[in-house]
Amino acid sequence: MKQDLKISSVFLVMMLLVSSAFAQQEIQHTQFMWDQSSINPAYVGFKESLSGNLFMRRQWLGLEGAPSTENFSVHSPLANRQLGAGLLVWHDQIGISERLAIRAQGAYNLELSKGYLRFGLSAQLSNWSVQWTNTNPDQAGDESIPQADLSDNAFNLGFGAFYHTDRSYIGFAAPQLLEEKYEYMGDQNQRSAQMIGAQALFLNGGHVFAISPKLDLKSSAMLRYISGAPLQLDLSGSVLIKNQLWTGLSYRHLDAISLSLQYLVTAELTIGYAYDWTFSQLQGNGGAHEIFIGFDLRKKKDGFYHPRFF
Image (cartoon, rainbow, N blue to C red; front, side, top):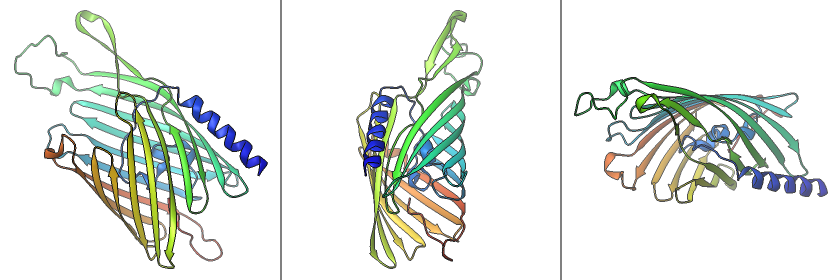
């Protein structure tokens, strides 16, 4: 118990220290709970298997230049499951702005008396570009519009912590600790800088309730801080039927309500779909469609597969 209290104290101190650092806003997924490595490097290796996940999201389909996001992650436990390693590649596009990032992640797993505490670090290289040559200005030769495409690279670091038991978890993440600035050549050949995104921190948790031998209820919440924007709360509830079909609803404060379905095709393969009904100022431009495909090459324990709830 003393060890647990000591580790928990260290965990809280590190959370406070990291919260003062800069972080860029992360990509957004409705089904993020199926692979939290997209926001938290401490999650890599958590599933005790070689795991891969693909997300594809299309948002506000009725709006020209609307956001589209794809990301693929793969991670696995190492060294008798005490360490984890993973790789995340994601692509995000809004209008003529495009970003491609590659993130290497590592985690350390510490066994406590009633659960496990994981710490993770990540290193990321990203490229941001703007395709000005794809624009069609009203006035040809407009000096306020660059005559060539712009592109620059940036490096970043991230930190995360993740505590879990078999049916509960809590996580904290600052996946991009450094303020990213992308430089480009401005008017009259003067060097200027453009920062993309804003400071972002994540605090989330959840619990799975056993309703019956064939029915489980999962509740989860995420608190998202983005600099310059209201504090945002996500709430979700999902039901697992016969260890095979998840169906759930989620609410994103001041933004959207979502319906999601995930089907465990086999013990190794899961497919999912989510739709967001937007009720913000962009509600007239349609919602968001999201597709998820995941695999877990998990070994049997005691002759049975033990499902992961998060």
